[in-house]
Length: 415
Image 1 (tube, rainbow, N blue to C red):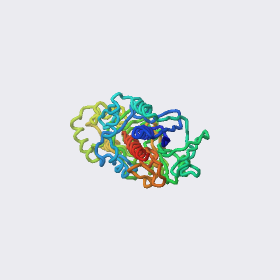
Image 2: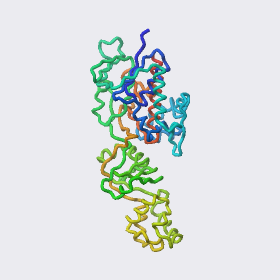
Image 3: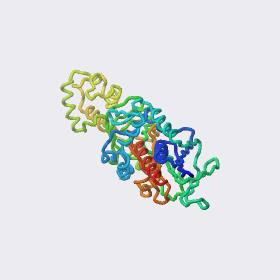
Image 4: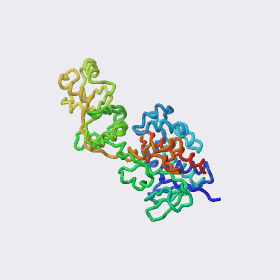
C-alpha cells in the first residue's frame, strides 16, 4: 500500500515534535524532515545556556497567555489541545524528567539540552522519520497541475531536487526579513512583517558598562514616553543591559522600538519596592539609623557593591561620606538615580540564546484546532513561523510543542 507522505520543513523543536508524533500516531505515514542547515535542533541546544528551557511551570491558561505579546488569543485556544502539563508528561513518558527552578523555568534534571535532543532524535529513529540535512526549500508549490491529487505539494530545493508531498508542515522558524518568506508566496498566505524580539539594549560609551558582569535580582525598567515597562533580573554587559527584565521589555516593545530605529531612553528603578516619595521617607530613617557609618560601607538596599559605589559617585557623593552628613541636594540626586536612573539606548544586540521574531503567517488564516491552512487543505504550520511569540522563560518552546502536537494529530487523522 502506498504511504501518504508528510514533509516537515524545519528540523527545530516544532518540526521534530510534529514529525515524531505524526509518525507515531499513524504508521501509514511516511514522514520526512527537511533541515536547511547541517545542525538539528540548534535552538534547543543553546537554550537556557545549554540546559534547554523546555517550558514554564504555568498551569493556568489565563496566566499563560499573558506571556505572549503577540498571538495570545490564538495561544489561549491552542492550549486547550496541548498544554504545559502535556509537555511535562510527554517527556516523562520517555524517561526525561523536568525540574522547576525558582523563577518557574523548567529544565531537564540532567541540566543538559542534549537530553532533549537525544529524546527527540530517538523518537525519530524509533518511528522511521527520515531526516535530510542541508535541504533548503526554495519554492513551495500548492495544488500543482499534473500531480496525481489536487491536494499534493511540490517542493523545489536549492539543489534543484523536486519532492512531492501529500501533506506539508511549515516549521521553519521565524525570519528576520520579509523577503525571506518569498518561497511561500505561492501559498497565498499573508505575512506580518517580522521584527526582532528578545534583544538586549546597547549603550555605547556609557560609564555603567564598566560594571559588566554585575547582575541585580529585581529591577523595574520603563521606556520613556510609553506605557512599556517590565520587572525582573537585569545584567550589565560590556555593550549595555541584558537579562530577563530587558528581554521581556524588548518583546513587549518589539514593534514600537523597531519604529524608533532602536533609539530611545529608559528609566531603571534599582529598588522597585520604592518610588521617589517612599524612598525619600526611607532615607530619613536610614540617616538616623546609620548616622555614623560611611555610605560606601553600608548598602541598605543589598545592591551589588560595585553598582552601589557607582550610584554614589554618579550622584556627586564622596565615598567616605557618613550617612548623617549627606547633603539634601546630593540625597535627592541619589534617590533619583535609585528610582529613575536614565539611560539613552542606541541600538540592540540579538540575544543569541533566545532570539525570536515578532511576525510571520497571519493567525486568522490558520485553523487553531488543527494548525491547518484555511486556504489550502494539507498545509499545516507549527512554531515560530506563525505570528505568535512569547517572552523569555520557556514560552516559545511551549508554543512549539503545542502547535507541533496539534498539527501532528490532525495530519495523522487525515490518512
